[in-house]
Length: 263
Image 1 (cartoon, rainbow, N blue to C red):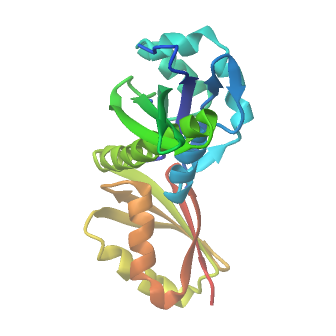
Image 2: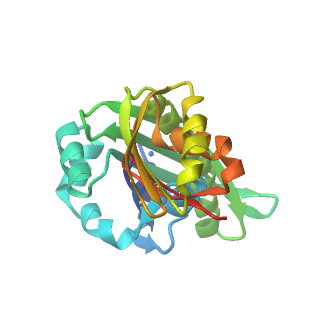
C-alpha cells in the first residue's frame, strides 16, 4: 500500500493580549505560521513534522506546491470537517492520505528571565479513498527563549514532535489493516542460477500467498506476488532473507519494489 500524505497546517503565534479559542510514499507539508499579523519564516511545526516523516521513509514534496491550497477557501472547509473536499484535494495531488490541522501558541510570560510560550496543535488524517478518518488527535508543547517569537516556535515544534510520532504510528496501523495486495517485485543484476535461492527465500515469508515469475532477461527478473501486508514490510523481509545474494533495495513506489544485486 502506498501511503502518500498531503499535510496542511495553519499555525498562529499569539501574544497574551489575544486569546485563541493538527517506495516511496509522497508527502506534501504546508504549515504557515503567524506572529500576530506577520507570517513566520521557516515554520517550526512544518519543519519538525517533515523531519519525522523523512526519517521514517516518506518522501516530502516541495512545499511551494501547496502554497495555493493555504489560500483556498476549501482549506478552511476541510478544517471544519468537509471530507468530500479533503478527498478531492488528496486526489488532485495523488495523495492517499490528507492531513489537515491548526496550531496555536501564546505567551505565558517570563520564567527565570526567559520568555515562555505554550502551544496546542490539532490534526486529522483522512483517507482519500473513502473519507475515513485515520487519526484525529491533538497535543501540547512548551518553549522558552529570550524572545517571545522564538519561544512560540519552540512550543509549536514540541507539540509537532509529539504528533509526528503519532502520525507515523497511525500510518503503520493503517497499513497493517490493508487487505491482501498484489505486488510487482523486480530485481536487477541477478544471475539465472541464483533465482532458485531468491525464490526459496520468498517462499519462507509467511504472509506471501503466491509468487510467480513474470520474466527473466539477461540479469533482470520480475515477479508477481500476493502478500498480506504493506509494501515496506514486504521489502524489509525480502532484504533480511536474501542477504547472502547481496541484495539492496533500490526503491519502491505504489505496489512496485525494485531490488539490485550488488555482487
